[in-house]
Amino acid sequence: MHRREVRDPVVEAEGIAMAFGSNTLFRDVSFGVERGEVFVILGGSGCGKSTLLKMLIGLYEPTAGRSRILGQDLHAAESDARRALLAKLGVMWQSGALFGSMTLLENVMLPLEEHTRLPPAAREEVARVKLGLVGLSDAADRLPAEISGGMAKRAGIARAMALDPRVLFLDEPSAGLDPITSAGLDQLIKDLARDLGTTFVVVTHELQSILAIGDRCIMLDKQAKGMIAEGDPRELRDHATHPTVRAFFRREAM
Image (cartoon, rainbow, N blue to C red; front, side, top):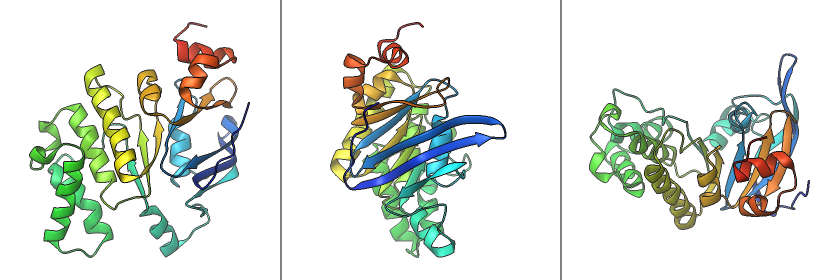
């Protein structure tokens, strides 16, 4: 498998392995994410995509190998250094993970309350700007139960952006959405990457989204227990020789 040299990486993985007891999920996973790109982690169900994301943001300790965010080893960082590094990351979980008893505005303000000393008026102003960036200015006072699934995903992205992170991690942003809503969310991700220069790491198995937003990708495989492809997703669609990669991108049965 060809591995491209990455200049100025903001996310790096070197020989990463994850195992739960005797069950090895993946091993020898190495890649780098360049500043400002939309990088996609893809693969079929059960291959370890979301687990890899959780490892990169420090929720899981790798069984082997190491990872770095913005040049620092998150797993080795302690106390204030770890908190400072985590503040440079934003995460949107699969469902949006909004607090149901809080309005969208209050949800987006929460990281600002926890991690900054901004006065309430300034926190509200920042939160309204973030909601505006994702097209939810008119929904600021709604509760999560009062909005659609697509709006909840957008609100989750707004909250992830509250602290102006250097890297945004999105876990299955298009899952469960209709094609039109999914296409709108894809466009939002592309617009934010272009306009804000934010680096995105996106976990998904949605083929149309992968091709729409991905600058580069890696593909994990459950059978191989690791990476089986890396590169531009459109190049992989058109020129992949690995049978599993070819089947994935061409929607072929195996």
